[in-house]
Image (cartoon, rainbow, N blue to C red; front, top):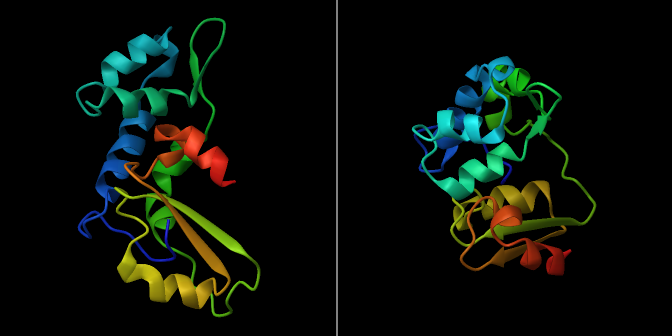
Length: 146
């Protein structure tokens, strides 16, 4: 993610992220007993089976139902804050490593001035053929980069 503010109208997939988080926060987990049942409920909103499977890695199985591993309600209530990069006036002086997918709409060439001004010691590696979730789409490539 680049140090910029995202919106659902900026050409990124931010509207997809908003939809995913909002939809997941409305699942009635106490009534679900398997990830398959959660997947079935998410299928109409998140039709991509790979993406849905990746999202469902954030669910854990309890003895009688499912539970989010992440604070999904807090994420849902703070979507605006999540889409906004904090206003920082001093650049971060340390080394910063951006790993992005070539198909990602989040780390773009047009954001290089913002990246350079806030992270002057940055390096960007791009994984060919991967999207935003390159760690899930191309895990071996990500591991080789770190």
